[in-house]
Image (cartoon, rainbow, N blue to C red; front, side):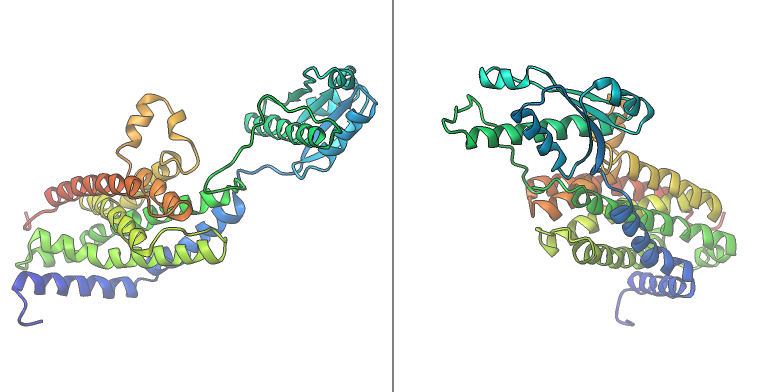
Length: 376
């Protein structure tokens, strides 16, 4: 160590002091290792975008064999819990009261249309007060009807080939399991909290305890000070990433098709803006309470709402979409989902890495300007 240049020695000494500070402060360990597990369990087990066992009513206005066969198809679906009636008026109160999320109406001429080989549509009424559930009911009902119709044509003695036979295939997530999307996305939210919240308290804590004046009285430069603050939390963030990845793969059974190298590169690039944002908040506020509030407001909320983790960015208004281009979590979420479900797609990863580094460089430059060089 004594043979190293003085700036390097000072940086390592400050980093070692910061590392000891982390281990002396149990809250840092809790935030780095316990909070990620709690959030992952919450997102992985508590939140699901899938809809199963939706209660729907089936109005059977045609009592013949084909109509009964279609009713059995709905009754055998895992997506629905069905209530059957021959009169629509008998089931409408259930739809109005919310006990039923939709009605599937099989019209009286259903069988006749099938026998004439005419289109035999069914009517689907859904509860529009719950738009997402209504969309699920409509899509699932159409899916059950399409599968039933395809089986009927295949079992027919003289099958009539359909002009178009749709064969949907879903790449990377064949069963459309929402957990495969939510768990990698929640990892990005966890990393945002750790990177931004922990470092937001670092310099503010020094100011509140009065130790910053002692540090500024030494020959240490601003670059050495910032590097010494970043290094321990960078290693802490990477350790949390390992924990989150192991939990995603072994607890939630999310497939990981990428490489460890690509995951490390993407995570390292993301920690640059996350840590830089936290340090900037800390240097600007000099107060731990205010810094924590700002870290949650500017880190956690954008990472959850505007990163594409839950809500589709392309569906947002143009001004909001423009704002999301400056949120590093947006690129981290898409990179993690690519790595977990598709693999090392470098045409996606490289632009994301460069954008995260660009935002991180911007934050670090502002932090450098906000950090005093000497005691005023």
